[in-house]
Image 1 (spheres, rainbow, N blue to C red):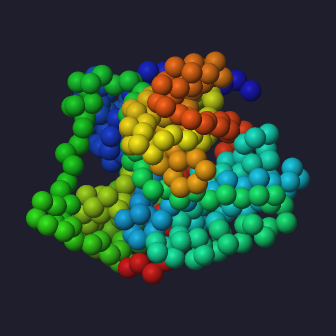
Image 2: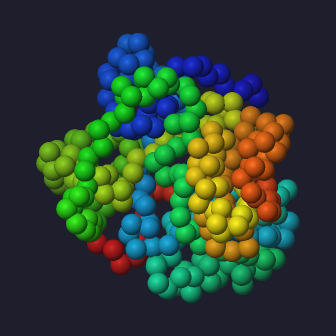
Length: 334
């Protein structure tokens, strides 16, 4: 099968949308020096052909939950079925198969304070017949990820174009005046986010119809939720658009004194799509995207090695079963 063809305008458009998925096409077109119709046509092609998806997500950590990264070693004949089952759950995201198809990795959530005993997924997985072993790594701190997508480090846009397109970030309630007001999701929020989970560019009229609110109320509430950080809009895209053909999960161990500096360094690397500090035998986790295995080798030996890494394990992703999760409201919230 012939690989799809993408050009510089596709890459510039996606980086612009990462800055703000709801940015008007007219503003993007003005900065990129093309017509509104050109931008609209490019986006429509990328979306309808399945190369780009804009969606809303919730940050579970701001809703009283703890994020986990789960590694599951499976029997060869059971990995596919288990992976598909995990992908269907509403409390998982980024489900992938690696290590020749015998390892499954995914992220999941559990209420803070109760930890893994409260998660049916974490409790049941070890007793699944096809599971050989399982480890769960609690995410203590995220260095890069969420709404900060890898496209922001792609260099597709010039610094001047980024500055011209950078949206003004709304100030969250309570910021600078003491404690921030807690955000409680209501039924209308859930209905609005269900629509945005399918299409982050949904029109205000569609959101108003789903919630029963006026368009001005929808605009104000969405702005409030985004300012709080609880809700963020993201871009899921085909990595081939940026000629990134190799996706690898990295598990590393660094001395506690070097964990912060190593994590911040990873966050700045253009190869790192996600980086966080975790509990467990390794304390640093990252998702890498490289052009090929040679680029991965050069990255590990020239960029990762100087960070004081004592141990490193890489696990190439053989197959992605699920990307970002659809909007999920944590249990007992709202």
